[in-house]
Length: 75
Image (cartoon, rainbow, N blue to C red; front, side, top):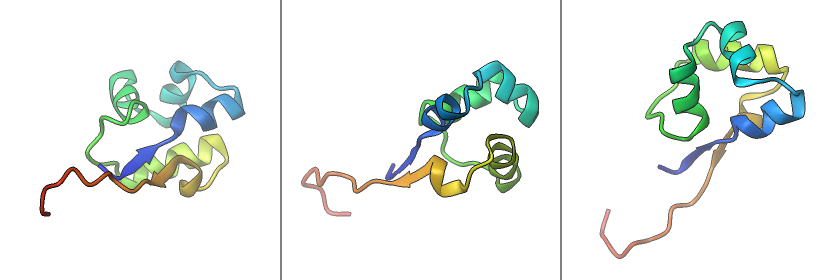
């Protein structure tokens, strides 16, 4: 997927743990881990809104578009 989640970077800048962020955002540790490790296929705007509110940041501080490498297949 061409969208990268840089949640760990913003969490480090704000000095907040996964446990604390999960509690404040009201998301399970498992779901936050999936998002943090770029395994999520989607994120709800309500979740993104809560994360940005808690971390005092913009969605663009967390989400990044990265060009995927061409692996020779037609898309």
